Image (tube, rainbow, N blue to C red; front, side):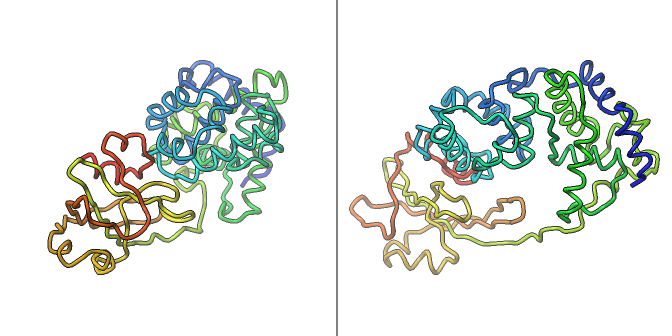
Length: 353
């Protein structure tokens, strides 16, 4: 990183000015969670947008708000209702933390979100960047966000080539991000600057094929000057992918009801309802009688991809006789109730086919 270059950017305030000017004409203005200072709505959108594309969240956000219009209604709802509405968004720990956080806001803060990023971070599921986003958007606090998009913008702009997989380097980038924040008229500039940084990373300074010529920072960008835009950010530590195979038992009655079990916490699909899962076909078959085993139908395996794991799912179906007893804990769910049950996306898709 070129320190004199970095110090010049910090000293003259040109970065913040350029970003704010660009946002006025080119930033995203019409997303449903924008133009509000309601911490509940901002918090909900920030949690949903974690590792999830905007186009996906656009389908879930209004439905969630319709069912849970405020933090009190979310806190009072059963967790299963929250998980059911979250079904398909993935990363289900977010939904569980969302519920826990709503309850904490009601119990510890009398239903009002704290107004500082420091206090917000004490709530379940709210990390430093999410806390900063809420504080900047709703309370105009001068705090920096540092999600994946913003990391990309800043490391390219500053030519910051240190490994962000190392905690001390990420803390240094937080400090640099704070130095580049606006210093005046914070009630207006902080919400706009925060949104502009998100928009730059999402629309121009993208991971692949960034639109450098349209970027308001292109004359100041160290990575562009170096011709090394594709080399930032640097993160050498990578999580290895793993692969698992699971056998699912689809037991269905003549009336269409399906036997489901709630997944343990923690673990894959924690807290959601799933077809009974086994680590081998032999384990699955051991729960059935000889007659039932002869009536089973094996279906082609299919692949479900998680962030760092490939799940190979093998489905065995069985038409269940009403008087037979099912081994293991679980419950029969009527076909009409499945749309309102918290199911992992592949299980929902499977049961709808």
